[in-house]
Length: 149
Image (cartoon, rainbow, N blue to C red; front, side):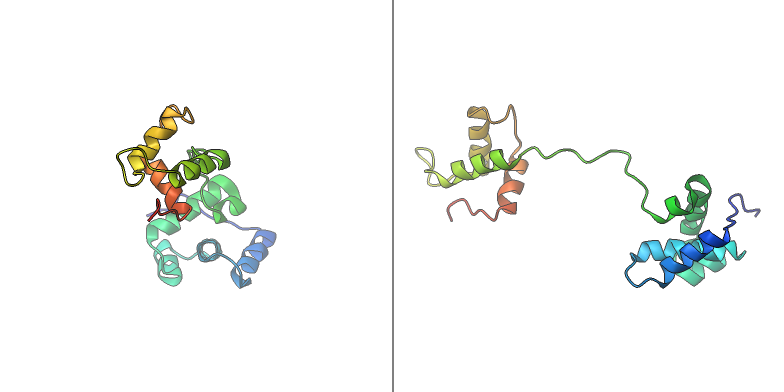
């Protein structure tokens, strides 16, 4: 099958990739991508490259395609995410409020606070319009809170 994405490196690009491969403190995936590009420039087949670098043939094809589309530097780094991470629901002040409530006396008729009661209390105090039990649980877990146990 005829190769669609043929990698041709300049001497400067080749030297930069060889530096990445030789450098000790490089992420393994980045080193593998650099090796793939170096072998592709030497004219090796995708199958040979995959066996040499110990990756799947599809990985070789993907790196080769990314090199043509984004350049050598862009093909070494991870693909940027399509969706940026969501901002945290609880910031420092709201976390402090949650801990304050969790460490206070439990509601009447209860021996301790539950995750559901804490979430409802945060909504009742208008800290949030709505907050899920899992958000409260993750925050307390992160802070190593035991809800009075």
